[in-house]
Amino acid sequence: MDDREKPSLGVRIFAPLFFISGSLSALWWFFYRVFDVFFGALSKIEVFDKGSFYMLGVGIGLLILAIVTVQEGWLGKPLSKRQSAHLTKAAFIGVALIFTVPHLVHYSENKYLIDKGYTVCDEASHQWLFIRYIVYIQPSVECSANLKKK
Image (cartoon, rainbow, N blue to C red):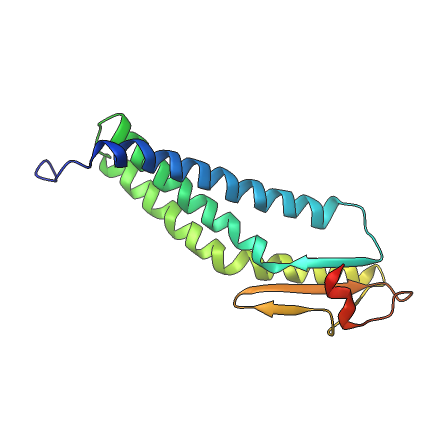
């Protein structure tokens, strides 16, 4: 490993900052949406943003990259075999969470809102690539495509 080319000063400084800020932003976004979905006050129209829940796995992945770049770039120490093994396992867990958490949260949220008397308004719900917005309404609200704007 000693024969590797040393990264430039800019990469050693800005890559860890990028990964740290990206990780904190992704994790903040995820936990904000979890709190909003499960502990926030319910209104007559609830919009479930399934794309936000991919951020847990993304945040973990960026956190791992931040740890590696800080240790190797800022501290100048190579990863030990034990650290490498643990970080590899954490990376696989992060990737698995990217694919599982959105579906688990969607299932939980759907059950929670249906039990509270909400129904899915298909006209107002929409999807773009993997980001899906599902609109739940109370019976007193008329379902229409105009609800997308609210």
